[in-house]
Length: 354
Image (cartoon, rainbow, N blue to C red):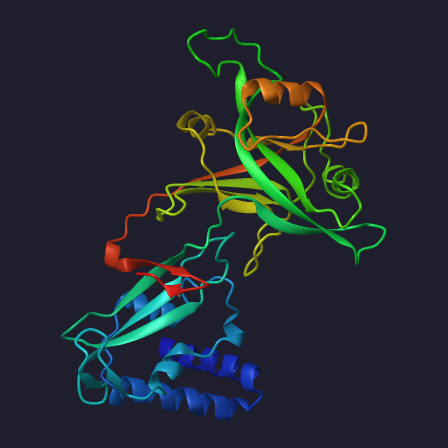
């Protein structure tokens, strides 16, 4: 049995699972389509396009739920308008190339590497190629979230979650401080702040208490920074060098781990404007301290500004106005080297952006 025979049988079994038709009917369909593609159509496909069509590099796409791509191409109308020169083309009579645009894999933004678009050209106009499209829908600013009440889940407050990079005194720091280094004796941390934007007539304090008791405390956040370790599933991913001028640095605060084909449950995902020193301090670290607040204290909650200075943070820590927990840190410093024509950007709202 040749490799092509084995590939045909795998494709037929997948089609049988998709359609419920008898195996022999599925095999006949695949063989007919593949023969038509190989003998009746003049597609000139690059190695990377052929590899993707075989399923290589797919993430989050169950092979038994996706139409065989060779059959898909064989069954397309052979006539087309060349995306490059605008003239008519016919894959039956002239060499034809295809550009496949697929979503580049990212566990937080794009966990499914599905096809976004395809373009056909005369082979003399443009070669076949696989283009990885980077999503650019990275929000900036507070993230709006609904917070249900534990006692009455049908009642939901609206809250806005923000993050900002800060420095905190290192808990276990036995090294002498460097007077020339403003961050000596400190470590980078991420401050998560919550503002109640609609309290449903219940008052801000009750919702901050709800958040403390339903989210922070169950996740093992506490006021003892040296011993605080968040519960399973929590982590932070900081991305640097992302190939988009809209958000070259962003952060994902995860409450659940990534799964194949599914985004984690995010507490926050969005752009991060961190000083260079803070970003450099993350190098080599395997965990990051998360601070979360404010807490309701004596019927009121301290107001946390958009940019907390060291004195304000010291006051919040001294007053136990925030809780803390260490979480695993994933620092993703990206270096995208593909040629510009091998990469594009896409938005779920506006489609391809070029």
